[in-house]
Image (cartoon, rainbow, N blue to C red; front, side, top):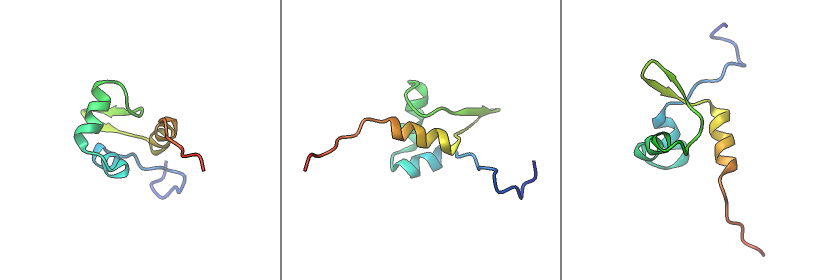
Length: 68
């Protein structure tokens, strides 16, 4: 795969996931520990997330909707 390939998506690290969700890195780590968070992959000791897995997980979270 060529690094210039526009179809290539960058993997997210836990700090980026924390920033995207506006939560702490400790929360992201706790999700992994309890198997409650988005799917992740390990590359050696590094933990990475595919953006589409994070999006899918966030979309699956319960949300409260106000009735107008």
